[in-house]
Each structure stands twice: as C-alpha cells, then as structure tokens.
Image (cartoon, rainbow over the protein chains, first blue to last red):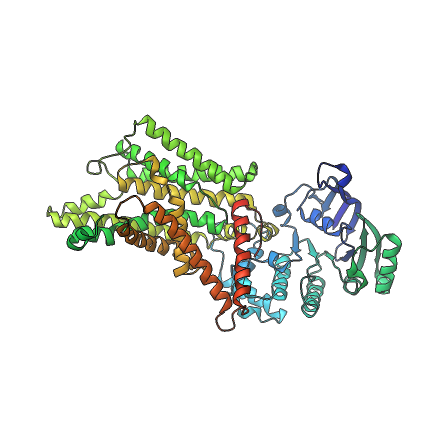
Length: 264
Length: 355
C-alpha cells in the first residue's frame, strides 16, 4: 500500500519568486493493494511531478511518501527501485540500445535481489526463464534474445521495459504516459499488454495517460489533477459509467483546458 | 631517421617495423583499454591520462632504481592510478564538477607530482636496465644464460620485451572481458550507457562511476609503469599527446573491428593500438627532420575521426539486408551529425542523453 501525504513541490525557475512554478500543492493519495489508478490532467497539472516524486527523481519540499510502512520520502532513485518498477514515456529511456535484449533483461531481473557482484551475469538458466516470459507477449522476441535492443521497434522496446519493470515483482508500478510516443495501433497493443500484466500480477499501479478513453477503460480508479492538486477522483461503478464528455465538462469546470489533446 | 639505413640494416629495420610498434602497441594498448573504459563504457571524456602517465613512469623509475621488486612496482602503480581515478570520480559525484573539467584538474595535479619528483631528483629519473631488475629483463636475463652469442642476445632481448608485454596484454584483456560480463561489470556498462535506466533498475550510477574510473586509472597506472620499466626512465613530458594516441588507437580499432558487441569493442581497443603504432612508424619515415611527429599524430586523429564519420554515414545510407531503415545521404549525414553533437555533450558534461 502506498500513502502519499500532503506532498508539496515548487520549482524555482530563477531568482524571482513570481516565476516559481508550484508543481504540487498538497497532494494526498492512497493506493491500496490491487489498485490500478489512471491519472489524467492537462500539461503542467503536476501529474508527472507526482510520479517523479514517488519514483525519487526529485525530493518533495514537504510531505511524506510511505510504501508498505516504509518511509521512502528521502531514498534515492536506485534505492527505491528495489520496490518500484517504472516505465518511461520515451521508449529509448527504459532499455539500453547498445546491448542485447538478454543483457537488458538480466539487469532488470537482478533488481531488488541480493547482489553477488562477481557472478557471471548471463546464464543458460536465465535464458530459458526469459524465453518463457517473452513468448506469451506474442511479439517473437524470444527468438531475438541476442539482438541489440536498438534494433527493436518503439512498441517492442516499450513492451520489454514493461516486462523489465514488473519481472522482479515490485511493490508499486509507475507508468508515465508509456504509450504516448507510439503509433495508435502499437499503443493499443502495449496498453492491452499492460492491462494483462497488471491484472495478472496484481501489482498496485499508477498510470498517467493523455488518452481519456484509456483512462476510463483501464483500471479501477481514476483521478484528475489540476494546478498541483487532485481535483476529482472516482472508482467502481461511477468510473465505469464515465464518458469522455463528462471528463471534459469537469475540466472546464475545474480549470482551463490548456491542452488541445483533450479536445481531440 | 633516414630511409636508406632501413633498407640495408636488417637489424634496425626489424626493430623499427616489427619490434617497436609491437612493444609500444602492447604496452600502450593497456593504457588504451583504460581510456576505453572511461571514454566508451562510462561515456565521459577523461583527459587525466596525460598526467598519470608521467607521474607513474617517474615513480616507477625511482622505485626500480631503488631495486624494489618490479611486480610490486606494478601493483603500487596500479594502486596510484586507481586512487587518481577515484579522486576524479569523487570530484564529479560530490562536487558536481563536469567530468571533462575534473579530468583536467586530475591531469594538472598528477603532472604537478611528476614535476615535483623531477625537481627532487634534479632531472635524473632513470635507472640502468642492465643492473636493475624490471618485468622485462628478468626473462631476458633467463634467456641470456642460454648463450652469450651477440646475435642470439639481440633477438632474445627483444623477444623478451614482446613476450612479457603480450602475456600481460592477454591476461588483462581476458580479465576485462570476464569482469564486464559479471553482474558488477554489466551494471557499470548500464550506468554508462543509460543513467535513467540504470537507476530505475536499482543501480547506483555514482558508485559505478567511482568503480569504473578506479579500474580505468589502475589500467593506465599499470601501462605507465610498464612504459617506464621499458624505457628505463621517466620524463615529465612522457604523457604529452597520450590522449591523442589513446583516442586514435581506439577509433582506428573501431573502424577495423567495429563495436557491435562488447567483445568486439574490447578487441578493437587492443588491435587499434597495435595498428596505430605501425601507422606511426610509417609517418616517422616521412618525418625526416624529426620534429613533425606530434603534428602528424594530431592530423592523423582528425583523419581517423573523419573516416569513422564517413563510414558511419555510408552504413546508414546503405543498410545491410533488412537491417534498419534506408536513409538518403543527406538524412544520414544529418542524423549522424546530431548523434555526434549529442555524444560531445554527454562526454563533456556527463549528463544523461539517450540515443
């Protein structure tokens, strides 16, 4: 269970306090076991900042982040990685282009496990195990274990990143618009894969998305952010009955729509 | 060096064309491996080799002159190099000094130590290779016991240089190959290639920088000590142009061998170093006055970089069967140009730029 308590974050662009960007102004959020939360909000609403604070990219000015009774507010990114899996928006960030798929997976499979620095990193046993996890994806990746990651498409790289983020069974999964950089067809495939993995593994998940249909279709809970605050939250039956139009109406009532994406 | 004696003096031409480039290529090849770790694995431009080398050749010369065991001298040199590497990494990690600048600071610092030793020893930092033991001449001394024939001794002496240098190169090459296949080695490679991915997978990139620069420094220290033991002396000017030599060797190897896999990129550093010294031997023939070599070396590096750029653009516009997208020459040129610009940013500032 993740508890985010009264999180504040201000970015200082320069010395002038008038130019300070108040990215988060008191966010409270509880993610329960098995939750799959979708987050929407216009650009600058603070949703990515929230995710970055949970992942540890920045430290909050105020507030606490508690994951399964551990206070992780001050931990560094690599220390939290033991508990948190993450998929980035840019498919090039989640994997390393110059090394093989096998090597990428082997790095991810050791996350959060006891380290034995001088043991050989690639074993036959791992190869079998990776083939077993890759084949259900249906992308033919299991036959290309030794190919450099850079030769794969964006969708394939994003699918692999998703697999890497979840294979060490983290306590929380963060998805930062992970289908936004893909073409619509691939985005749909990756989204369905995400849904399958999250539902099977039951890892609590927070997913930022720009796509309102996805936000409604997937997950059991939806939150909307604006101006550094959570302005709307719904779950269960209420969420299932939502229509994209309702969300747009809500946007117009809570704040201006700064992003043309929402109107399309 | 004039051309005529080379044709007629078999011993001298053998030395010029077979032995010198081979010994230089092997000894300084270990240094190239050190630069390979900072430049290619960690992706930072570390120039400190220009200072570490003279400092350690001088330390080596002083110790060998004091009859310290040459193996122990090698170990001390590795430790010294590793300390410099660690200090360099700490400047970047804790004081947030960009790696290019911290490397220059360490270069100035180690060069300062070299100057200091030189002054303390009143410019006489050398030892007599006939009366002091080095890693090279123990084998030579063994071979000398077989016969006192002058011709035999001539070949035996060079053979011992080559054998010792080759043996050490092979040991280090395999050690690095296995090390970078281990969990720690893989983590270092990940940290150098993609900082965000590494951190998201629980790897402390700061720790990896420190370990990698320590290994890089240790290798440079090791090679510098061999260089000093081979030359029989240490000069403050020993390090001059070493970064040019290291980068030329590295790029030349990448042109010939390629860097598609880690094994290949490691091999390209070694083969590149050997090839480079043969090219230099040819350039020395052109340099009849004897003062143009440094200029030639710099021009050669430009030529190698341009050649590597050109080959890369050609490969992008003529992809092999089904591999990658075919681009027009103009697109390929633009794309490669952007890659290079990105690389320079990353090398100098140590930021995280993905490609």
